[in-house]
Image 1 (cartoon, helix red, strand yellow):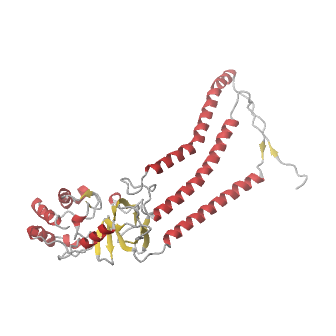
Image 2 (cartoon, one colour):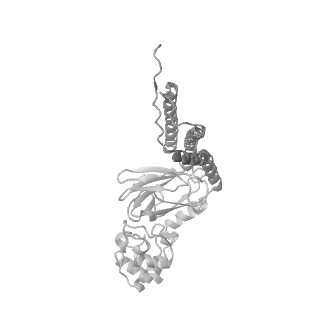
Image 3 (tube, helix red, strand yellow):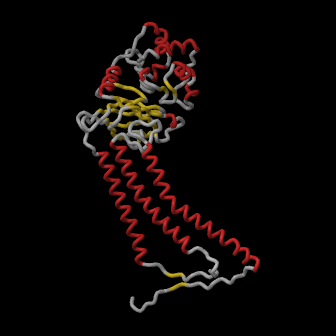
Length: 382
């Protein structure tokens, strides 16, 4: 309103009650404090530049294709690439905010630092500016709206992507603590190691994953191929991947699901069309029946193994544990906890808790000779 003066709040300066010795001591310390404030301000203002330099250097260090250490900075599939692009966009905006705020803070620290010529009185306390308050209210709202719309667009682009006729369908079932992979149109059931064909712009062959849980919450995550997708009991979820490079991509369960959550690993093999066709043909064969290992097969069929495991061509028809029909076609056992070697198989059967503490597979109380015979049989299951 016209004629209404701006209200200015001031406070009387505090009387200086320090002794002469205290004043001299503070004066000696003041240059050091100023230098320290300046150094902190400089370090603060240089943090954004250092952060972006490290981030972009790290991004350049990742080559295309599978990585020994999975990284979201090396996407090899469309969903992962979309998520990374969104991440860079969000990082650019939030990084810009950090630069502006950090720069203003550094400027205020340096510009209004304490000087020898300053007295101990406080400056005038002035009420804020309407323009500034509007700016720091409207601008954040606009930023949030932009981030929301961009994120929603990426989510819908991934979820509503059209499914080409050549798409491969796989049902993924999470168990404590292993993965089951079912190929319903191919009649294949395997565990822990997912095989999919490579996809290209000329020959798009995405893989659509139907995610289920047999017990508790799990989360399917292969960082280079797609984002995390939860497997929730009685609540099916779906995701898809279209790997552009052949090779092995590793991942794991990203949702705490029990004692051995950390060892619920997964391996995704991206094959050429020829390799994938050969793998499918092999997996569709019944379990090998080698007469030389009949003793081991007899042990398998007469022990409690058949209650949990299945081997095509035998009486074993359990579903609680992994399908063992083609056990030797897998590089690992116990959901990636150990390499698939006769020695590790022996140790796994003898005492599962030794390799994977908390695993739900019980020790079968077999003697060494029986375990050796069983291992000999299992190693024929290619």
